[in-house]
Image (cartoon, rainbow, N blue to C red; front, side, top):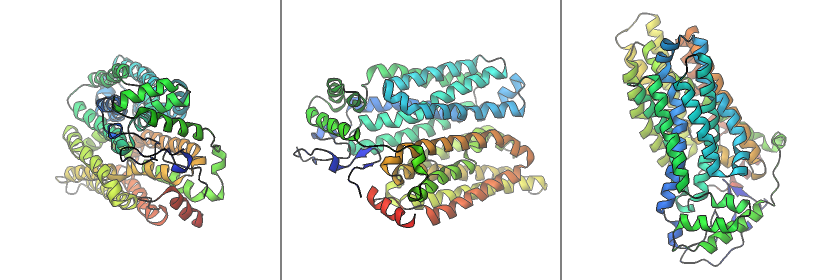
Length: 483
Protein backbone atom coordinates (compact mmCIF):
# COMPACT_ATOMS: atom_id res chain seq x y z
CA UNK A 1 0.00 0.00 0.00
CA UNK A 2 1.16 3.52 -0.77
CA UNK A 3 1.71 5.71 2.23
CA UNK A 4 0.29 8.68 0.31
CA UNK A 5 -3.27 8.36 1.44
CA UNK A 6 -6.13 10.38 2.74
CA UNK A 7 -8.99 8.82 4.66
CA UNK A 8 -12.20 10.87 4.55
CA UNK A 9 -10.33 14.01 3.65
CA UNK A 10 -7.61 13.58 6.26
CA UNK A 11 -3.94 13.19 5.39
CA UNK A 12 -2.33 10.16 7.01
CA UNK A 13 0.21 10.65 9.73
CA UNK A 14 3.01 9.51 7.46
CA UNK A 15 2.61 12.56 5.24
CA UNK A 16 2.82 15.12 8.02
CA UNK A 17 6.02 16.44 9.47
CA UNK A 18 5.57 15.37 13.05
CA UNK A 19 6.14 17.70 15.94
CA UNK A 20 6.74 16.95 19.56
CA UNK A 21 3.43 16.27 21.32
CA UNK A 22 2.40 19.05 23.65
CA UNK A 23 0.15 19.04 26.67
CA UNK A 24 -0.73 15.40 26.23
CA UNK A 25 -1.97 15.80 22.69
CA UNK A 26 -0.70 13.36 20.10
CA UNK A 27 1.82 14.64 17.63
CA UNK A 28 -0.19 13.57 14.61
CA UNK A 29 -3.93 13.89 14.20
CA UNK A 30 -6.17 13.25 11.24
CA UNK A 31 -6.32 16.96 10.55
CA UNK A 32 -2.76 17.61 11.44
CA UNK A 33 -3.95 19.62 14.41
CA UNK A 34 -1.66 19.93 17.35
CA UNK A 35 -2.28 22.21 20.22
CA UNK A 36 -3.51 22.64 23.73
CA UNK A 37 -6.71 21.40 25.21
CA UNK A 38 -8.29 24.74 24.34
CA UNK A 39 -7.66 24.05 20.68
CA UNK A 40 -9.68 20.85 20.94
CA UNK A 41 -12.72 22.37 22.64
CA UNK A 42 -15.97 23.66 21.22
CA UNK A 43 -15.27 27.37 21.56
CA UNK A 44 -18.09 29.90 21.12
CA UNK A 45 -16.79 30.80 17.66
CA UNK A 46 -16.78 27.13 16.57
CA UNK A 47 -20.34 26.73 17.83
CA UNK A 48 -21.45 29.95 16.11
CA UNK A 49 -19.69 28.99 12.87
CA UNK A 50 -21.38 25.58 12.87
CA UNK A 51 -24.77 27.12 13.61
CA UNK A 52 -24.45 29.61 10.76
CA UNK A 53 -23.33 26.87 8.38
CA UNK A 54 -26.18 24.50 9.26
CA UNK A 55 -28.68 27.26 8.57
CA UNK A 56 -27.85 26.24 5.01
CA UNK A 57 -28.65 22.62 5.90
CA UNK A 58 -32.02 23.80 7.18
CA UNK A 59 -32.60 25.63 3.88
CA UNK A 60 -31.83 22.33 2.13
CA UNK A 61 -34.46 20.53 4.21
CA UNK A 62 -37.03 23.31 3.75
CA UNK A 63 -36.70 23.08 -0.03
CA UNK A 64 -37.16 19.30 0.01
CA UNK A 65 -40.16 19.43 2.31
CA UNK A 66 -41.99 22.28 0.58
CA UNK A 67 -43.77 20.57 -2.30
CA UNK A 68 -45.75 18.08 -0.22
CA UNK A 69 -47.77 20.48 2.01
CA UNK A 70 -47.98 23.08 -0.78
CA UNK A 71 -49.37 20.74 -3.44
CA UNK A 72 -53.10 21.17 -2.88
CA UNK A 73 -52.93 24.95 -2.50
CA UNK A 74 -50.77 25.53 -5.58
CA UNK A 75 -52.88 23.27 -7.80
CA UNK A 76 -56.10 24.94 -6.63
CA UNK A 77 -54.85 28.54 -6.83
CA UNK A 78 -52.92 28.35 -10.09
CA UNK A 79 -54.80 25.54 -11.80
CA UNK A 80 -51.75 23.36 -12.44
CA UNK A 81 -52.09 19.98 -14.09
CA UNK A 82 -50.52 16.83 -12.63
CA UNK A 83 -47.69 17.10 -15.18
CA UNK A 84 -47.01 20.74 -14.30
CA UNK A 85 -46.90 20.06 -10.58
CA UNK A 86 -44.75 16.99 -11.09
CA UNK A 87 -42.31 19.22 -12.97
CA UNK A 88 -42.44 21.73 -10.10
CA UNK A 89 -41.65 19.02 -7.58
CA UNK A 90 -38.85 17.44 -9.58
CA UNK A 91 -37.15 20.47 -11.11
CA UNK A 92 -35.59 21.13 -7.71
CA UNK A 93 -33.28 18.18 -8.28
CA UNK A 94 -32.30 19.42 -11.75
CA UNK A 95 -31.06 22.66 -10.18
CA UNK A 96 -29.39 20.67 -7.41
CA UNK A 97 -27.53 18.52 -9.94
CA UNK A 98 -26.20 21.63 -11.66
CA UNK A 99 -25.22 23.19 -8.33
CA UNK A 100 -23.60 20.01 -6.99
CA UNK A 101 -21.44 19.57 -10.09
CA UNK A 102 -20.21 23.18 -9.86
CA UNK A 103 -19.95 23.39 -6.06
CA UNK A 104 -16.43 22.05 -5.59
CA UNK A 105 -14.85 24.37 -8.11
CA UNK A 106 -16.79 27.41 -6.85
CA UNK A 107 -15.90 26.68 -3.21
CA UNK A 108 -12.21 26.33 -4.12
CA UNK A 109 -12.26 29.54 -6.15
CA UNK A 110 -14.16 32.02 -3.95
CA UNK A 111 -13.97 30.30 -0.57
CA UNK A 112 -16.42 28.48 1.70
CA UNK A 113 -18.11 31.55 3.17
CA UNK A 114 -18.67 33.29 -0.16
CA UNK A 115 -20.00 30.06 -1.66
CA UNK A 116 -22.60 29.85 1.10
CA UNK A 117 -23.53 33.49 0.54
CA UNK A 118 -23.65 32.96 -3.22
CA UNK A 119 -25.97 29.98 -2.81
CA UNK A 120 -28.31 31.83 -0.45
CA UNK A 121 -28.78 34.63 -2.97
CA UNK A 122 -30.12 32.07 -5.43
CA UNK A 123 -32.33 30.54 -2.74
CA UNK A 124 -33.81 33.89 -1.70
CA UNK A 125 -34.54 34.91 -5.29
CA UNK A 126 -36.07 31.49 -5.91
CA UNK A 127 -38.35 31.63 -2.86
CA UNK A 128 -39.49 35.15 -3.82
CA UNK A 129 -40.26 33.97 -7.35
CA UNK A 130 -42.44 31.20 -5.88
CA UNK A 131 -44.06 33.63 -3.44
CA UNK A 132 -45.15 36.11 -6.13
CA UNK A 133 -45.79 33.63 -8.93
CA UNK A 134 -48.95 34.00 -11.00
CA UNK A 135 -48.14 31.32 -13.58
CA UNK A 136 -46.51 27.90 -13.71
CA UNK A 137 -43.28 29.09 -15.32
CA UNK A 138 -42.59 31.46 -12.41
CA UNK A 139 -43.01 28.56 -10.00
CA UNK A 140 -40.66 26.40 -12.04
CA UNK A 141 -38.02 29.15 -12.31
CA UNK A 142 -38.13 29.79 -8.58
CA UNK A 143 -37.90 26.10 -7.77
CA UNK A 144 -34.94 25.70 -10.16
CA UNK A 145 -33.07 28.58 -8.48
CA UNK A 146 -33.71 27.16 -5.01
CA UNK A 147 -32.46 23.80 -6.26
CA UNK A 148 -29.25 25.32 -7.61
CA UNK A 149 -28.55 26.98 -4.27
CA UNK A 150 -29.37 23.73 -2.49
CA UNK A 151 -26.89 21.84 -4.66
CA UNK A 152 -24.12 24.25 -3.66
CA UNK A 153 -25.07 24.02 0.01
CA UNK A 154 -25.13 20.23 -0.04
CA UNK A 155 -21.37 20.28 -0.67
CA UNK A 156 -20.02 23.37 1.03
CA UNK A 157 -21.78 23.15 4.42
CA UNK A 158 -20.26 19.84 5.63
CA UNK A 159 -16.90 20.78 4.11
CA UNK A 160 -16.82 24.08 6.01
CA UNK A 161 -17.84 22.48 9.31
CA UNK A 162 -15.20 19.77 8.96
CA UNK A 163 -12.51 22.36 8.24
CA UNK A 164 -13.24 24.68 11.20
CA UNK A 165 -13.88 22.15 13.97
CA UNK A 166 -11.16 20.31 15.95
CA UNK A 167 -10.66 16.61 15.23
CA UNK A 168 -12.10 15.31 18.49
CA UNK A 169 -15.49 16.98 17.94
CA UNK A 170 -15.59 17.14 14.14
CA UNK A 171 -17.71 14.02 13.66
CA UNK A 172 -20.46 15.13 16.01
CA UNK A 173 -20.54 18.66 14.68
CA UNK A 174 -20.54 17.56 11.04
CA UNK A 175 -23.43 15.17 11.68
CA UNK A 176 -25.57 18.17 12.66
CA UNK A 177 -25.73 18.87 8.91
CA UNK A 178 -27.89 15.79 8.27
CA UNK A 179 -29.94 16.39 11.42
CA UNK A 180 -30.75 19.96 10.35
CA UNK A 181 -31.81 18.78 6.90
CA UNK A 182 -34.23 16.45 8.65
CA UNK A 183 -35.42 19.28 10.91
CA UNK A 184 -35.96 21.51 7.89
CA UNK A 185 -38.10 18.88 6.18
CA UNK A 186 -40.06 18.08 9.33
CA UNK A 187 -40.75 21.65 10.42
CA UNK A 188 -41.81 22.57 6.88
CA UNK A 189 -44.27 19.67 6.98
CA UNK A 190 -45.54 20.91 10.34
CA UNK A 191 -45.93 24.57 9.33
CA UNK A 192 -47.38 23.59 5.97
CA UNK A 193 -50.22 21.79 7.73
CA UNK A 194 -51.52 25.19 8.87
CA UNK A 195 -49.99 27.84 6.55
CA UNK A 196 -50.73 28.65 2.90
CA UNK A 197 -48.18 27.82 0.22
CA UNK A 198 -47.27 31.51 -0.26
CA UNK A 199 -46.71 31.98 3.48
CA UNK A 200 -44.59 28.83 3.50
CA UNK A 201 -42.45 30.23 0.67
CA UNK A 202 -41.99 33.48 2.60
CA UNK A 203 -40.95 31.55 5.70
CA UNK A 204 -38.41 29.72 3.52
CA UNK A 205 -36.42 32.95 3.13
CA UNK A 206 -35.85 33.32 6.89
CA UNK A 207 -33.03 30.75 7.32
CA UNK A 208 -31.45 32.10 4.11
CA UNK A 209 -31.31 35.59 5.61
CA UNK A 210 -30.06 34.21 8.92
CA UNK A 211 -27.13 32.55 7.20
CA UNK A 212 -26.34 35.60 5.08
CA UNK A 213 -26.21 37.81 8.18
CA UNK A 214 -24.35 35.22 10.23
CA UNK A 215 -21.57 34.91 7.65
CA UNK A 216 -20.36 38.38 8.63
CA UNK A 217 -19.54 37.12 12.13
CA UNK A 218 -17.68 33.87 11.43
CA UNK A 219 -14.19 33.26 10.03
CA UNK A 220 -13.32 31.74 6.69
CA UNK A 221 -12.07 28.18 6.66
CA UNK A 222 -8.40 28.22 7.69
CA UNK A 223 -7.73 25.29 5.36
CA UNK A 224 -9.01 27.17 2.35
CA UNK A 225 -6.93 30.22 3.35
CA UNK A 226 -3.89 27.95 3.60
CA UNK A 227 -4.64 26.44 0.22
CA UNK A 228 -4.51 29.84 -1.49
CA UNK A 229 -1.36 30.84 0.39
CA UNK A 230 -2.85 33.35 2.86
CA UNK A 231 -0.92 32.08 5.86
CA UNK A 232 -1.43 35.15 8.08
CA UNK A 233 -5.17 35.08 7.49
CA UNK A 234 -5.11 31.36 8.19
CA UNK A 235 -3.50 31.93 11.58
CA UNK A 236 -5.93 34.76 12.37
CA UNK A 237 -8.90 32.52 11.55
CA UNK A 238 -7.45 29.74 13.73
CA UNK A 239 -6.97 32.19 16.60
CA UNK A 240 -10.65 33.13 16.45
CA UNK A 241 -11.76 29.51 16.20
CA UNK A 242 -9.51 27.98 18.87
CA UNK A 243 -9.40 30.80 21.42
CA UNK A 244 -6.65 33.10 22.62
CA UNK A 245 -4.96 30.42 24.75
CA UNK A 246 -4.61 27.86 21.97
CA UNK A 247 -1.25 26.93 20.45
CA UNK A 248 -2.08 28.40 17.04
CA UNK A 249 1.44 28.40 15.48
CA UNK A 250 1.72 24.62 15.90
CA UNK A 251 -1.65 23.93 14.34
CA UNK A 252 -1.03 26.42 11.53
CA UNK A 253 2.28 24.70 10.81
CA UNK A 254 0.58 21.33 10.64
CA UNK A 255 -2.03 22.72 8.22
CA UNK A 256 0.77 24.13 6.08
CA UNK A 257 2.48 20.73 5.94
CA UNK A 258 -0.84 19.06 5.14
CA UNK A 259 -1.60 21.51 2.33
CA UNK A 260 1.83 21.28 0.74
CA UNK A 261 1.78 17.48 0.77
CA UNK A 262 -1.78 17.35 -0.50
CA UNK A 263 -0.90 19.44 -3.51
CA UNK A 264 1.69 16.83 -4.51
CA UNK A 265 -0.83 13.99 -4.74
CA UNK A 266 -2.13 13.27 -8.21
CA UNK A 267 -5.84 12.83 -8.77
CA UNK A 268 -7.27 10.49 -11.37
CA UNK A 269 -9.94 11.50 -13.85
CA UNK A 270 -13.45 10.07 -13.78
CA UNK A 271 -12.51 7.69 -16.60
CA UNK A 272 -9.97 6.03 -14.31
CA UNK A 273 -12.85 4.72 -12.20
CA UNK A 274 -13.84 2.20 -14.86
CA UNK A 275 -11.04 -0.25 -14.19
CA UNK A 276 -11.34 -3.78 -12.86
CA UNK A 277 -9.54 -2.93 -9.63
CA UNK A 278 -12.21 -0.36 -8.76
CA UNK A 279 -15.16 -2.50 -9.87
CA UNK A 280 -16.37 -3.57 -6.42
CA UNK A 281 -16.02 -0.07 -4.96
CA UNK A 282 -17.83 1.48 -7.91
CA UNK A 283 -20.64 -1.09 -7.83
CA UNK A 284 -21.19 -0.62 -4.10
CA UNK A 285 -21.03 3.19 -4.15
CA UNK A 286 -23.25 3.74 -7.18
CA UNK A 287 -25.69 0.92 -6.43
CA UNK A 288 -26.36 2.12 -2.89
CA UNK A 289 -27.36 5.52 -4.28
CA UNK A 290 -29.55 3.97 -6.96
CA UNK A 291 -31.28 1.73 -4.42
CA UNK A 292 -31.64 4.62 -1.98
CA UNK A 293 -33.42 6.83 -4.52
CA UNK A 294 -35.47 4.17 -6.33
CA UNK A 295 -36.74 2.86 -3.01
CA UNK A 296 -39.20 5.76 -3.27
CA UNK A 297 -37.91 8.17 -0.63
CA UNK A 298 -38.42 11.34 -2.64
CA UNK A 299 -41.82 10.27 -3.90
CA UNK A 300 -42.97 9.78 -0.30
CA UNK A 301 -41.21 12.91 0.98
CA UNK A 302 -42.51 15.22 -1.76
CA UNK A 303 -46.06 13.89 -1.86
CA UNK A 304 -46.69 12.47 1.63
CA UNK A 305 -49.75 14.67 2.16
CA UNK A 306 -51.35 13.42 -1.06
CA UNK A 307 -50.60 9.81 -0.07
CA UNK A 308 -52.49 10.22 3.20
CA UNK A 309 -55.44 11.89 1.47
CA UNK A 310 -55.54 9.15 -1.19
CA UNK A 311 -55.67 6.56 1.59
CA UNK A 312 -58.57 8.35 3.24
CA UNK A 313 -56.57 9.80 6.12
CA UNK A 314 -56.11 13.41 7.21
CA UNK A 315 -53.12 14.89 5.41
CA UNK A 316 -52.33 17.31 8.24
CA UNK A 317 -52.36 14.66 10.97
CA UNK A 318 -50.22 12.36 8.83
CA UNK A 319 -47.62 15.07 8.24
CA UNK A 320 -47.41 15.89 11.95
CA UNK A 321 -46.92 12.20 12.75
CA UNK A 322 -44.05 12.07 10.24
CA UNK A 323 -42.34 14.95 12.04
CA UNK A 324 -42.62 13.14 15.37
CA UNK A 325 -40.93 10.04 13.91
CA UNK A 326 -38.33 11.51 11.55
CA UNK A 327 -36.16 13.68 13.80
CA UNK A 328 -35.65 11.21 16.70
CA UNK A 329 -34.88 8.35 14.31
CA UNK A 330 -32.29 10.46 12.47
CA UNK A 331 -30.64 11.34 15.78
CA UNK A 332 -30.70 7.68 16.82
CA UNK A 333 -28.97 6.69 13.58
CA UNK A 334 -26.18 9.22 14.24
CA UNK A 335 -25.65 7.79 17.74
CA UNK A 336 -25.66 4.14 16.62
CA UNK A 337 -23.54 4.49 13.48
CA UNK A 338 -20.16 3.93 15.12
CA UNK A 339 -21.48 1.50 17.71
CA UNK A 340 -23.48 -1.06 15.76
CA UNK A 341 -21.67 -0.65 12.42
CA UNK A 342 -22.78 0.27 8.91
CA UNK A 343 -24.11 -3.09 7.68
CA UNK A 344 -26.50 -3.88 10.57
CA UNK A 345 -28.05 -0.42 10.41
CA UNK A 346 -28.36 -0.62 6.62
CA UNK A 347 -29.99 -4.06 6.83
CA UNK A 348 -32.45 -2.92 9.51
CA UNK A 349 -33.20 0.29 7.63
CA UNK A 350 -33.76 -1.39 4.26
CA UNK A 351 -35.94 -4.10 5.81
CA UNK A 352 -38.01 -1.43 7.56
CA UNK A 353 -38.53 0.57 4.36
CA UNK A 354 -39.59 -2.64 2.61
CA UNK A 355 -42.16 -3.34 5.34
CA UNK A 356 -43.42 0.25 5.22
CA UNK A 357 -43.96 0.14 1.45
CA UNK A 358 -45.72 -3.22 1.75
CA UNK A 359 -48.11 -1.82 4.35
CA UNK A 360 -48.97 1.22 2.20
CA UNK A 361 -49.41 -1.02 -0.84
CA UNK A 362 -51.72 -3.35 1.11
CA UNK A 363 -53.72 -0.33 2.26
CA UNK A 364 -54.34 0.82 -1.31
CA UNK A 365 -55.06 -2.76 -2.39
CA UNK A 366 -57.76 -3.10 0.29
CA UNK A 367 -59.25 0.21 -0.83
CA UNK A 368 -59.41 -1.02 -4.42
CA UNK A 369 -61.18 -4.18 -3.21
CA UNK A 370 -63.50 -2.18 -0.93
CA UNK A 371 -62.41 -4.29 2.02
CA UNK A 372 -61.68 -3.20 5.61
CA UNK A 373 -62.28 0.43 4.63
CA UNK A 374 -62.32 1.57 8.26
CA UNK A 375 -58.72 0.41 8.89
CA UNK A 376 -57.02 1.22 5.58
CA UNK A 377 -56.16 4.82 6.63
CA UNK A 378 -54.47 3.46 9.77
CA UNK A 379 -52.49 0.91 7.75
CA UNK A 380 -51.39 3.64 5.33
CA UNK A 381 -50.33 5.94 8.17
CA UNK A 382 -48.39 3.18 9.93
CA UNK A 383 -46.72 2.18 6.65
CA UNK A 384 -45.51 5.69 5.84
CA UNK A 385 -44.28 6.20 9.41
CA UNK A 386 -42.45 2.86 9.41
CA UNK A 387 -40.85 3.80 6.08
CA UNK A 388 -39.89 7.29 7.28
CA UNK A 389 -38.41 6.10 10.55
CA UNK A 390 -36.52 3.23 8.94
CA UNK A 391 -35.09 5.39 6.18
CA UNK A 392 -34.00 8.05 8.67
CA UNK A 393 -32.24 5.38 10.74
CA UNK A 394 -29.81 4.26 8.04
CA UNK A 395 -30.55 4.48 4.34
CA UNK A 396 -30.70 8.26 4.46
CA UNK A 397 -27.10 8.90 5.46
CA UNK A 398 -25.04 5.70 5.57
CA UNK A 399 -24.61 5.32 1.77
CA UNK A 400 -22.72 8.63 1.81
CA UNK A 401 -20.53 7.45 4.69
CA UNK A 402 -19.67 4.19 2.92
CA UNK A 403 -18.96 6.04 -0.33
CA UNK A 404 -16.38 8.18 1.47
CA UNK A 405 -14.65 5.09 2.87
CA UNK A 406 -14.46 2.59 0.00
CA UNK A 407 -12.88 4.65 -2.80
CA UNK A 408 -9.08 5.08 -2.95
CA UNK A 409 -7.92 8.66 -2.54
CA UNK A 410 -6.71 8.99 -6.13
CA UNK A 411 -10.26 8.47 -7.45
CA UNK A 412 -12.29 9.70 -4.46
CA UNK A 413 -13.01 13.13 -5.94
CA UNK A 414 -14.14 11.77 -9.30
CA UNK A 415 -16.07 8.95 -7.65
CA UNK A 416 -17.82 11.38 -5.31
CA UNK A 417 -18.92 13.54 -8.24
CA UNK A 418 -20.26 10.52 -10.10
CA UNK A 419 -22.11 9.14 -7.08
CA UNK A 420 -23.61 12.57 -6.29
CA UNK A 421 -24.79 12.96 -9.86
CA UNK A 422 -26.36 9.49 -9.80
CA UNK A 423 -28.12 10.32 -6.52
CA UNK A 424 -29.63 13.57 -7.79
CA UNK A 425 -30.58 12.01 -11.12
CA UNK A 426 -32.38 9.18 -9.35
CA UNK A 427 -34.10 11.71 -7.12
CA UNK A 428 -35.37 13.62 -10.14
CA UNK A 429 -36.64 10.51 -11.92
CA UNK A 430 -38.58 9.29 -8.88
CA UNK A 431 -40.05 12.66 -7.92
CA UNK A 432 -41.13 13.39 -11.51
CA UNK A 433 -42.66 9.98 -12.17
CA UNK A 434 -44.30 9.43 -8.79
CA UNK A 435 -47.63 11.13 -9.51
CA UNK A 436 -47.92 9.30 -12.83
CA UNK A 437 -47.19 5.99 -11.13
CA UNK A 438 -49.84 6.72 -8.52
CA UNK A 439 -52.39 7.43 -11.26
CA UNK A 440 -51.44 4.16 -12.95
CA UNK A 441 -51.71 2.06 -9.78
CA UNK A 442 -51.19 3.17 -6.20
CA UNK A 443 -50.93 -0.44 -5.10
CA UNK A 444 -48.46 -1.35 -7.84
CA UNK A 445 -46.32 1.72 -7.14
CA UNK A 446 -45.68 0.78 -3.52
CA UNK A 447 -45.20 -2.89 -4.29
CA UNK A 448 -42.49 -1.83 -6.79
CA UNK A 449 -40.84 0.29 -4.09
CA UNK A 450 -41.09 -2.62 -1.64
CA UNK A 451 -39.39 -4.91 -4.15
CA UNK A 452 -36.52 -2.47 -4.58
CA UNK A 453 -36.15 -2.12 -0.80
CA UNK A 454 -36.11 -5.92 -0.52
CA UNK A 455 -33.41 -6.02 -3.19
CA UNK A 456 -31.45 -3.53 -1.09
CA UNK A 457 -31.44 -5.98 1.83
CA UNK A 458 -29.96 -8.69 -0.40
CA UNK A 459 -27.43 -6.29 -1.94
CA UNK A 460 -26.19 -5.09 1.46
CA UNK A 461 -25.98 -8.65 2.79
CA UNK A 462 -23.98 -9.92 -0.19
CA UNK A 463 -21.82 -7.04 -1.41
CA UNK A 464 -21.53 -4.15 1.06
CA UNK A 465 -18.48 -4.47 3.35
CA UNK A 466 -18.46 -3.50 7.02
CA UNK A 467 -16.18 -0.46 7.33
CA UNK A 468 -16.61 0.28 11.03
CA UNK A 469 -13.31 0.47 12.92
CA UNK A 470 -11.17 -0.34 9.88
CA UNK A 471 -8.46 1.70 8.25
CA UNK A 472 -8.60 2.71 4.62
CA UNK A 473 -5.83 0.19 3.87
CA UNK A 474 -7.79 -2.69 5.39
CA UNK A 475 -10.95 -1.76 3.48
CA UNK A 476 -9.06 -1.45 0.19
CA UNK A 477 -7.16 -4.73 0.73
CA UNK A 478 -10.36 -6.69 1.40
CA UNK A 479 -12.11 -5.22 -1.63
CA UNK A 480 -9.15 -5.73 -3.92
CA UNK A 481 -9.04 -9.43 -3.11
CA UNK A 482 -12.60 -9.80 -4.39
CA UNK A 483 -12.31 -7.41 -7.30
